[in-house]
Image (cartoon, rainbow, N blue to C red; front, side, top):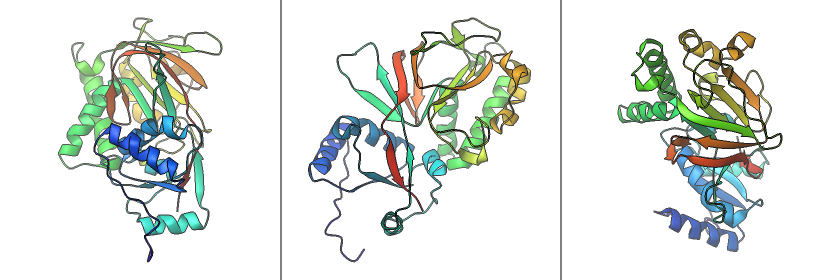
Length: 294
């Protein structure tokens, strides 16, 4: 790191500035794009850079600095990782590949813009995100904040009455765009509503959780709970660590792999910590990205 003349540093304050910054980086033909921040910063970079880099991104280096760093868990990054250490790892060729989720609006198809990130959630996931923000304000971060949020959500859903917002379902329709078939709704409750939907391309999760079983395959994965059946919610910690079976599926707790889905969501959805409006969207996998790892 003695010679820093070949390192370009920018601190864009808005997404418009970020778009122009990435455009300038692309024009100059950078080899590595370093993101100094957490999951939300990575989401903004991937979303603004979609029009700039398309399917041909430079290698990415993530320096974990955010309040929630779920991506760094998936990549196996240490909490404190310097640029010098990252560049040394890049020199040695230590990399992994991931594809982000890509969400494109069907209501404004002419714009052609998408947002890209790694964890999408609807329904109770939105409320859990608000609770997670409160945990951050009280000093809990990363996996500890995730654990507190999950525990609080389970208690609220398990013991809450019908008017409790944690037990509310959200109008949600999920269609496989390749087959045209809607996702079955085997659980109780209205067929056009879901309690919780989570999609990701992660292969490793905070706290060592295994919501998609041991050694999940790469690509788009989705977990759905149709209705907050109390005994299913009571088993949620075990489900998060790999428990799965037909007895859960019959009550509307499903997990599956997909390549391209159409989502019609009647409430806001969360992508890597930020809320986006209700609407009709296409959910698929974005470009293959190369991340530098230790």
